[in-house]
Image (cartoon, rainbow, N blue to C red):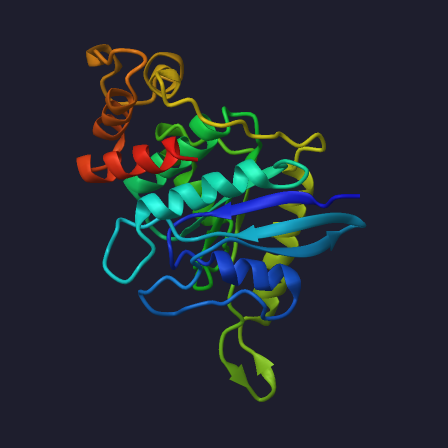
Length: 262
């Protein structure tokens, strides 16, 4: 039986690869503690949760295009290509972010992949990393849940975790208990949220479909009433998408060209 595909996405440095390694129980996905992203192409890793088989896909970080990192358009098209070509479809999207702050870009990336590319047909969950200093990691969610709702980021589940073991002292890692607890949280989140009948992505039709969904159907852009895009014009659709939803004109043109060629 084909494993259920679980796709992790988020910015570089949010801990995607560390979460993968935590689930695996050993270091397989490359990680980086610096500013440079280290995952340039997607990679799949097989795990079992209570007998069910899952393939966890680590993906390139969704960056702002800084030098030395995967360009934003390239990362988006790589992830789009992965979603389209996965054997067995997609059973779960997992948005990874690092506490404490919820960035504006998080909203744009979430909506682009969940609402636009996947048409809201794939369950989506949130893993929040970097909470090892919290007395109660779950309290972070209680304090920030309303912000996610205001951003329109409605998840099917969440896990507030630490994806690091801490320092090794006297033969033991200082955060091992929190790490083990975090692994169990993510496993239960996946088990709870995944779609047993996977969704298969079709090619995005940038000839008006995206701009219609973004502005009139989903209505999550800032000023949908101002949209005057001529349906059927790819450039116009992409321009409106990015002008209302956080990309620069250069990024818009590059992304539109790349997706149109796929």
